[in-house]
Length: 187
Image (cartoon, rainbow, N blue to C red; front, top):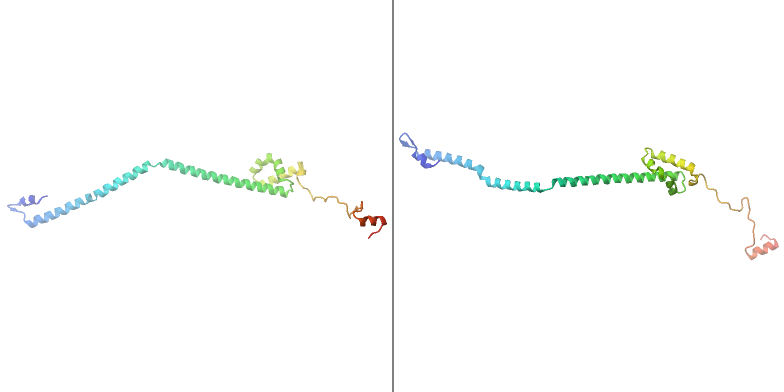
């Protein structure tokens, strides 16, 4: 609204007083400023919108599927590594249990006994009660191939001596021994 419009406006034959025109113009100015206020931030909002759109385009450019695929691959590798480690630990525990059982069964050669048990190894590994199954396999092997195990105390080798068969001198080993033998002295 313009001031001239209000000055030309007449109530009856009289124009509007100046105070009324000033009051109307002041109120109109306040309304105009209030209406402008949302548009004052327009440039800032426009810049923010442009920045947001750029960021969205950057995200669209990212290979989200590739990132997810890579994450799935790493997860799969980690799970495989855990399975491999568990399998190695289980194998070490089985080998330790088997070696311990062979030693307690007084096996002479662990390698030889393992060679004899080679065809049964998969069944022994898969067994629910490995300890009992290993023991029964070793007992069966002991019956068939007893030479692989020590069954009792090893007899000492025969040595003639002061026991049942005293040693008889064969020939003297020194000059003094030869003289004693010739003259039958004990000396």
